Length: 285
Image (tube, rainbow, N blue to C red; front, top):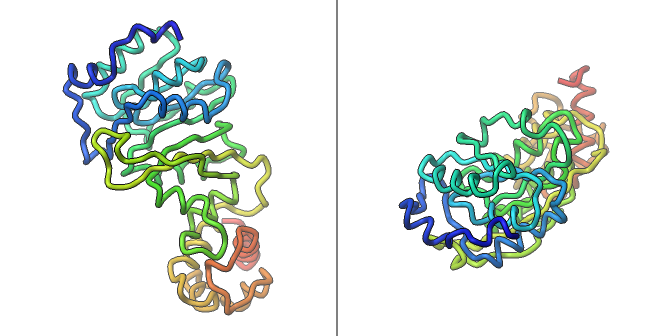
């Protein structure tokens, strides 16, 4: 921890660089050192790991990751105001921190993650958190280039990620996350831990990729889940009409009850639907 022990307090860094959090960027800075350390520890031992962090802001979680021994941290930040503070930290720790200015939805990380284990650890900006997760869950080929995700979401989003079958929170995100990963909520973070305090509780979620998800075409899985949950109050025989095939034939091929609703269908059932849809199309596109 010696490399960061003599760094100025985060609040001083924020004041010196005028880093008031912006709602338009989904920013809520986490300054509690105990919580940033707890998030970093949730990613397991980091000594030989490259960590990708999205939305580091003034660098609170970044400091914790470095303090816990991360071999390297790649911090992606789109807010130009935060870059000088992050560059100061980079100057202090040397090659262990790489700061990339840009939108995480567009940055090509491949040149930076070519060797060794990679984990993504981030207090995600609320306004792009779900989109980023879906992007990471849909990368090809699979297994992905990362071995773990430890991410902070609004509690409502976290509940949708891990929602069990038959609950109101169970939906498309639950199916996609459950198909390709094992996911669990580790702990909650009270709003007052953030600056400024959001109006909702946050949750830290850990997702570990499955080495061999049930085989199906990912795009068809997404299509079937979107159709089913797009009209979740209707029976499948009705909601699946938007797929452009006879839903009764499709459901029969997937061995599913036509009177069931989307929230009654397990991940395995959606995989069966995707595979049946591929067969009815005569291809896997």
